[in-house]
Image 1 (cartoon, rainbow, N blue to C red):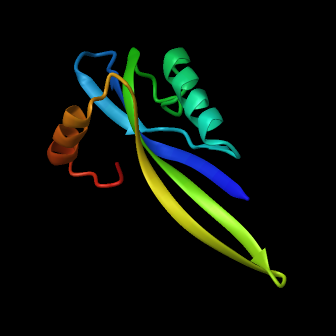
Image 2 (cartoon, rainbow, N blue to C red):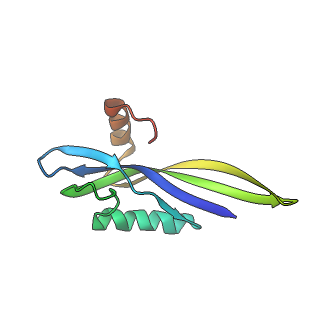
Image 3 (tube, helix red, strand yellow):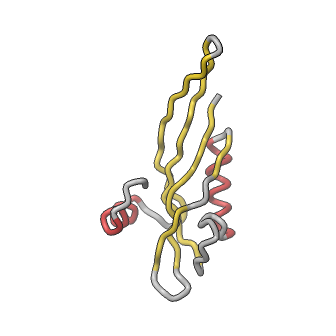
Length: 107
């Protein structure tokens, strides 16, 4: 069985001007395609930022955690893999600039 979880940072235009970022809300599911689609839809409707209140969302840099779970003789074992996901207007170059500027390493 596999479980998928997306977390990360949302970049947006602030109401007072400029850009900022906030943690994204967590999205979980049992299918990679569905959790990414849900994140893209949440970016479009403005709900991906956990309600922090951007004027407009620009994009998101997310980490997809893929947890594979196996049960052997009644004992549960799991392995976690991670994948970078960029949605909206965040290129890998912008992502690296934000990493350098703000110093966060969970993206």
